[in-house]
Length: 275
Length: 211
Image 1 (spheres, chains in turn brown, blue):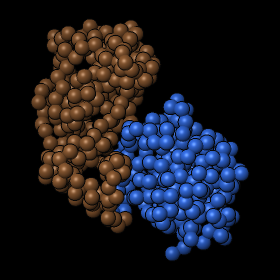
Image 2 (image 1 turned 90 degrees about the horizontal axis):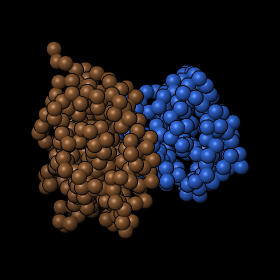
Image 3 (image 1 turned 90 degrees about the vertical axis):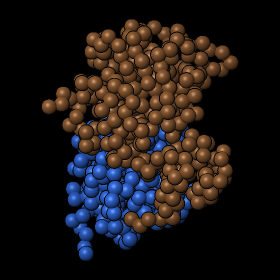
Image 4 (image 1 turned 45 degrees about the vertical axis):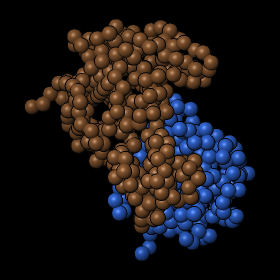
């Protein structure tokens, strides 16, 4: 398995981005990164990654746009309805026992998962005493998340997921549709703090009862996965909860012993008592 | 385009050359795989990576369906799982399946929730392109029946990386569009009937390797 030109150029580009912009992609899984970069190359009209690197270094407008290609993850509201159903059935009853709640949605991208959780918490009567930290490394995505505006064409899928996730009302109660866009109720985000945070370079910033980080770890290599899961472990209160993507696993993580499986199929874990 | 029968005509295909087999199928794919996967030899060396386009609910039971029909272990791919020789992996529903280098001679599986490619997730192109990148000439790519164009670019990538390319003969495919799209896109090493592809897979027998 010899190293080819593209691999060399990829390495150089990642280093250039780290040195110049302090975004750290060194621990990202190469396969997905390569795919995303190939898409970006054609978008920026660059035949090689070296040419893209030239633009990234010398044209100030290129990097913010490239960051979109490298990080933005388009999700759905209530993606994997069973996950949200399991949160309601198995985690919410325990969250109720806390007088105030803090939840961390790590890698929130454009916010679909954050609003899903906020809606779930409102229906369970917990939202008023909850603070949700929604973090991502992409400032543009965070702005979109904060705006809470989604294309109306996506709403049918969201609504279907919402129903299958055990929603107790109708999703239409949470947004207003106009001019092809669905604007989600501002009151949902009164208790959400949107903030720039990198799982690759930043540290723990709060103590929380639940971390939800779905389909983010699959983009990391094992070393970076370990770093991220280590942050979640350190951020969680005693017997706190961690939810990850339905095809992600702590099986290959060095922190696997720090968690018990609470809902195995939905990848919801509970932090073990230490010692 | 060569049309060839498996066996004597497959001189270059030695079991010790192939580290991985990548298979893509769409409409009619489950039936086609029911012919192919039982043909995998007990001493299979290569790993087998498969993308089938199916609705979420059905795709999630693929590994279960084929486990009982195969002598080799069949699993749904997990993220970061080391690729084991002689094991069959299905892409999970609603995720792309990719391969990453894990060391000088080892690979691991990776999943992605990126956008649909060719209206599909999992997409055959995504698997084939990343497998071509990791395995190069030690990869065998197979396009089976299907009613879309997914896999054509991926098979071309395998060809460019000097891997071996196989397409199910369009006349024998339940849906010929996908085989034809692949043949149109780049030269194909073998155009074979399902039985011939099964015969080809039988030759990937680690015990038959002469050194």
